[in-house]
Image (cartoon, rainbow, N blue to C red; front, side, top):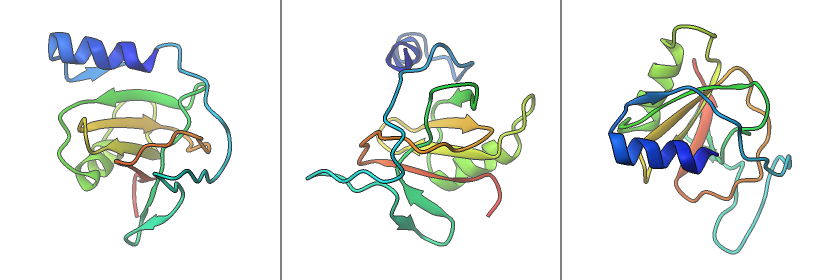
Length: 118
């Protein structure tokens, strides 16, 4: 259903959304393909890959976020359920908020994940 949320954003221009039924993913910590290796460090505080959308840990999404650092800041300032982790998608400028960052098997070449505070 995450694709549907993305479609709604692209169609309506809405900047935030609450989670819907998440798409199940593979719970592996690190996944390697010919194109992407997830779980690799990116700077002092981020790593490649994404947090798992399955379950109650995904608490919201914002769109139009220009950088992983901005996504981290939005997570730290998130009201409602406390955001402790985020995933930022560079291609779509999408920022997802999580209470915990469970391992995901998503192979995204343009995403990084990290804590709300480094």
